[in-house]
Structures are given as C-alpha cells and as structure tokens.
Length: 320
Image (cartoon, rainbow, N blue to C red; front, top):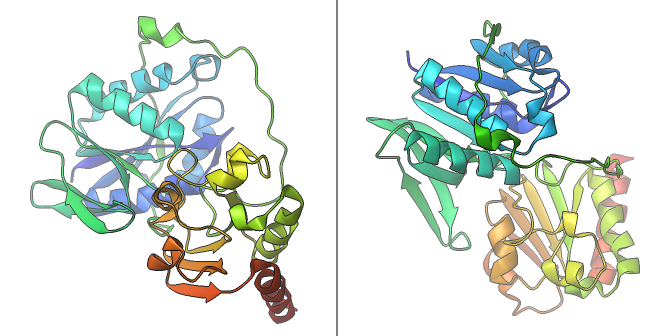
C-alpha cells in the first residue's frame, strides 16, 4: 500500500488536533507516515501511533526553532525523497500553507490549499474545496508530481486507529537558504483559557454591530458558556475593539468549526471567505437584508444586545 506523508504540528511533543485529523484522511489514501520536527519530536510517536501512523520520521535539530520555515521545507523534501509518498498532507495554518507551497515548488509538484475533504481517486487523491463564499464546491486533483494538499482544521473527525508508530531518524541536509532568516526573540501569547480560534469546534464572532470594545464582553460571555473561541470581523478589529489575532476573514484567520455564530456581522465577502466552510452557521443581526443571511443555516433578526444575553442565559440554564 502507498504511503502518505503527514506533517506533524506539535508543541514540545504535544500533538495538535489538526494533525490527528490529517491522519484520519491519510488512512483513506494509504499508510500514514508522520514527519515530526523540532524539540520533542520523538515524544509525538505514541499519540501518532494511536491514530494510525505506521512510522514517525523525526528530526530534532535546533535549526527548526532558530530559523523560519525553510529548515522544515528541507526536512519535508528529504522525507519525500526517502518515502516516495502518494501525497503530502499539511494543516492549513499560515505556516502550514507556506511550507506546503515551498515544498511543492521544490519537488515540482502541484499544490491544493484549504481542502475540506480528501478521498482516494482512480489516479490519485481528490481534494474538495469550498470556493467563492461557499457558492461552489470543487473537486480537484494534482496532475503533476506528488500531490501536496493543505487541509482546513475541523474538516475530518479524529479517529483512533492502531498503528506501529515506529520512530525513525530522518536524515536532513539543510540548504544555504535555511539560515537566511533567524528568529531573534519569542514572546509567549497570553492565554485566554479559550480554544485556539482555528481549531475550535464552536466560534462566536462579533462585528460592527457590537458597537464598542466594552460590548465584546457579551460575545465573550456567550462563547464561554459554549466553550467556544471568540472571533471578530475586520470592521471590529480595525476599530480597535478586538485584537487582530482574532480576526476571521480573508485578511485574518480561516475557521471551519462545527458551529459558527455571527453577531452584528453584515456578511461582507471578506468575512465570508474566512468562515464559509463552517458546518452550521447562525447569524444574529437586526437588519433582515444583511448579506450574512444568504449564507446561514439559522438566522435571528433582532438586536444582539437583547438576543445574545438571552441566548447566554439559556445555554447556562441548560448546562446547569
């Protein structure tokens, strides 16, 4: 059976959820071979093996932390040359897409980004994408080289499956470009206690209709009642009401949760591009003509300052 490379997103050996989702997809295409890089790479093997990885190729060189993405591209290129995989799967984070694009150029292959599903085809993997503000669903395949595909988080379930998870050292020769951009400092992000925005199963976002930074407390209260992440539209971020790191949209982050609640967001194309693949979309807006209602599964025409607190109270009551 063909092997499929899966790039592992981890923090000091703790594997992040999108990687486990990639292993589920990889098993549809062949035998998953994970590539874990950096400090703690070998510690990922147990978790990866429990989710179907037959092998875990590891490299713990300091270059992965000391420099930007090029050393990781060098390592993935070495893995491709060693394994000759049927495909390479990478999570659709900002870094993941840069790594995937650079890798595809290096190995002369086609690239598909932001897939929401991957399945085996007669002559290679077939990726599903949702495009043009969810107006169309496309199915694509790479016609040249080893397919390199980035997949949005929450596109597949995490399904445990027994795998050997055998650890093997990956031999990597770093290119001259690997040391071109050095990381000079790092600052730990202050934790909010909420899920990571791009990985959250539920996202509650606020927009221009929130009408002030102080009113985002309503959005946060609803999110906390649901165990959700908090997002914001570009209008809210540009107004300084919420941090840019929480922006959902074409110039912000792309999310694909099971449930997306948009409060006071009109639904401009820029915002829709960042959340259109959410499984269930709920909008709260007092303007019944707001474009967001064209996209939603459920719409509430009403003032968010009345609706959101009532919804929060109802969720807390049912939880209690």
